[in-house]
Length: 142
Image (cartoon, rainbow, N blue to C red; front, top):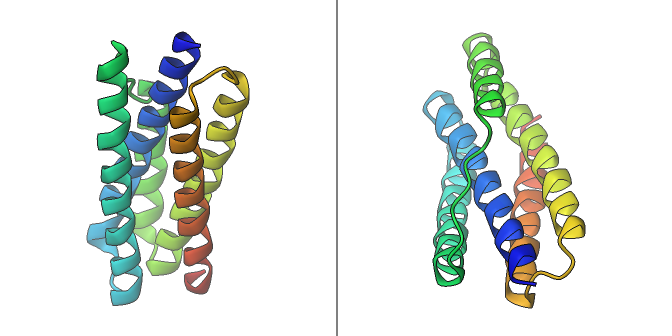
């Protein structure tokens, strides 16, 4: 049970870091005020969830997890290449696409670690909801 909990929380932490890196990379290029505010709100939510995730990991003696260097590098490359040629529509597309990939990864982790403690499962659900909400909020900008 404890190992499932640690693994689920570590996967949540890696996902949050990936989301924050993507949003931080896009935000300086976003011109639309409403889109910027939605992204800033999402950063706040992701930071709150990250703080909770890291605290739970510390309490269990687990270690934080970062996204793989390959995933980070590919995300950075694609994001920067597309944003160099893009606009707010491109930013919204990249965020929505990243959220959708994050939801799939988190659902896979949640299903892979069914014995995780309820609190960790709840946190994963909150993160999934956060990603789904952010993805949906990007649709008007596509």
